[in-house]
Length: 477
Image (tube, rainbow, N blue to C red):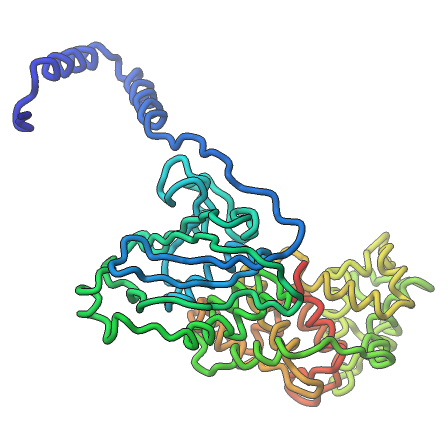
């Protein structure tokens, strides 16, 4: 038996040789030796290349009946789920969380070809792991379920919470065709209560009985109610992935229930045809585009619109109806200035030799309100933004899309949600309405321009066009 308190003769000899070598080194040679030793150690422990197990997506959407087992649970803890093949692995993670009653507090990953910690498994990483870059794998949002599973007997592995290390095995029991109204996920069976969050990794009945009122409890209606949560169900309605991710993250902080209520309205709403209303509400955009196309705007030496153009623009911008002032200097008519700048951000106008001219898309869209609405819907989110601006813009579009004509944009609610989630204003203050007025991506100017004018402090009473374009903007793209 080896005594760790004494070195073997061979080890002692190697140590002496190493010490003798160090004694002969020049000071400037030591960093090179340390670097070589570090590379040798890194090479020794470097993760070997994983075998690619990812498949091609199926040609047609199907429904997988999947049994999901919590590994090593005694007695077994499992759920049987019907899941559409076209959901992403990020969506599948949310489905598993709902099915087992977990709260998405921790990191997770999926694996093909072995366990989630097998060095040769192909890994699919949660957003944090993918961003950190310490593991080799594909982000879960970029992988469809049918790129991992195809037929009966196929298996996918999943781990949640690297501390408690809940490892689960997903096994395909059968495959059937999907219809247009097939939900993204439904629970059809299961057994026993899942262990609660942060309980230390226990999964046997005796230990669970000490922390769970009824370890044998399983209520399929509770599981399906969780799976049909309006925010989760928006995935089925074609919501943009980054909005779905944001809502999913903010939901635990929403004590008012505003997110869930709005998600329910949005999931059940249909696209509105606005007809003549669309052209009327888009008039500020159409006026600027037609005026720029036909005559162009000559800017002053300071880069502002000329007084006559400010006066003319003030007549078509709803925000200028109750604006106090002469309305003939753009630097003092900030709604005109901000809206005009937003047209550049939206790719509709461009500056050229001291003039404002339409871009190529702007020229084409000047007489096509429907195409202009599509262009705005695409550009509202498709621009470079910092994280706060993106989160605020997504929430503004979400609440607008879930509204009815005449509803007011709930700016105070949006500010409170952003504050509860992660954001603060200057000096740690909560996010206020005026922080949303001042987003530098033109989104607030859009809502103001296409909605009825408001007297007094700025607010937005949403028009049919504002709601319609918001709904287009948050769809998958």
